[in-house]
Length: 236
Image (cartoon, rainbow, N blue to C red):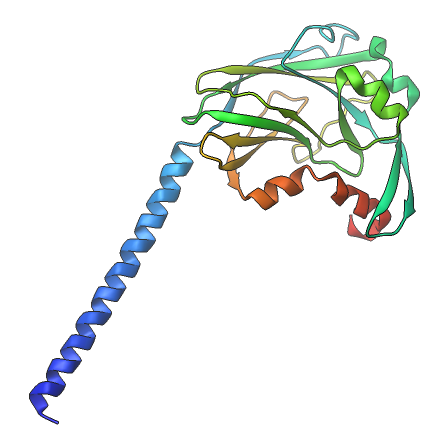
């Protein structure tokens, strides 16, 4: 083979490899910049007002809010059926469901991010010990021995707009995570992306939002996960 042709082929290969490396680097940088842009423009709640009525039973519990939840302590569970498809009955202390003995905290949360929120979910993460019920239906949930770990607020929260959130507790069962947040705010933004933001209820403390996948978002509030864990305690 002609030496000049060989040199030409080698030069061509080197040039092609250089272009490939450059294209790969540019694609990586573009992907990184896109992630940075999405993160920068993410939806995110700030606590702009916080009312702590935990020391005063009934005070504030009847104040209308956009989302009103009762945080219930699970007393015990019974499990029947197969492990893959268990039937779980949860039991709660009857006296805890008496609204006259409730206290509460109330948050005003502002979408301080740069993207509108299409809907949000309030999600309880302490599935083994704690449930959340719509406050007005707490008695019905408890009497029917149900588990519930999320409540959907299916309304748009535009940038700069606010939503009010109330957590009610029985005065003798104020549940809080010793280290991590027992409440996550799940967010579906205007672009169809999913986010989660830890809220350290009943404290006046919230972390920043972070992106998660649709699968992770669904798993956050899937009651079937808890049912399977109750059927097989080793999974906890």
